[in-house]
Length: 319
Ligand SMILES: NC(=O)c1ccc[n+]([C@@H]2O[C@H](COP(=O)([O-])OP(=O)(O)OC[C@H]3O[C@@H](n4cnc5c(N)ncnc54)[C@H](OP(=O)(O)O)[C@@H]3O)[C@@H](O)[C@H]2O)c1
Image (cartoon, rainbow, N blue to C red; front, side, top):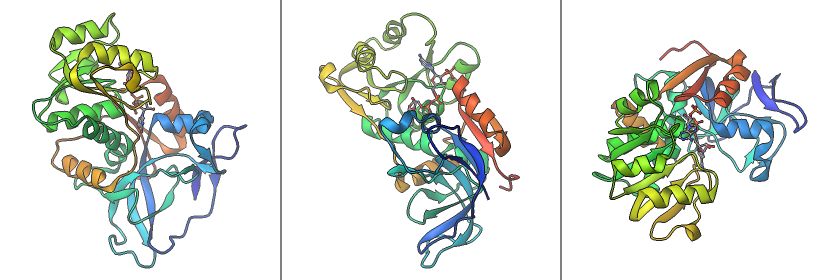
């Protein structure tokens, strides 16, 4: 089978022929039909992730996947051949990834049943980004009537975060440039859009919510000072400031709880996501879909920036 692997830090990733894995006891062999790309895949591919993630070469890149169970190992009870699944792979090391024609995962990690009626490409987008969005909202304790600001709302995590916040009953303001981006965030449940490309984003956010937001999900600021400046300007006292970029430094925020979120493929969260997708309260915004052969072009598309998710199809969609 073909897999997209990084063999060393000194050469770019490439397609290689490798043996199709065989599921061990308790494992599923999944035929991968679609994947989606996340910024972390770029960081692992470039070697930039080595400061925080150990590599075990060869590294098969990729986290998100959607596909069908091709074979089950001994002792598997949850799944049968032919079941449609989606989720994401994350390990202690960069080694085992989803950008391959087949992958093995333990039946109780990484994947859950795919929601009915949602094709593989849209399911592939529902992995890491949607789980992260859900974990951010859990960390912020977002519930009905809360006022939430999502900074980075047009990206993978943000587009899910604003839908999930809306589904919880929260009132959401979202960063988006005028035009297509603004129309998108309003269609996903934001009450207001704030143009992040114009000067003084924080002041315009304050105009919308003079008494402050109950929470900000900041998916953009990597610098703790910039994160703290925005949060302290727009979040009400007693509110929460959530970072996916390890920028939340409690020492820099007074009266606002600063929380860093690290995503993991929690099956309960994946199940909730599948259920919301099934009831059409959550959808993957697919920016573009590439063929597996064009994976490098898909990486470039993520580098350029996209509205929603960049997805990759490996086999003809059957769902
Ligand atoms: N901690 C974790 O476990 C975890 C998990 C997932 C993601 N992350 C991190 O969280 C961040 C967001 O992830 P993602 O998958 O949503 O990334 P993404 O899909 O690249 O989305 C980022 C979005 O933000 C927009 N944007 C760029 N500059 C902006 C600005 N100054 N203000 C507001 N919006 C801006 C981008 O627009 P353009 O496309 O036009 O540039 C894009 O739509 C990434 O840095 C990622 O590495 C962390």
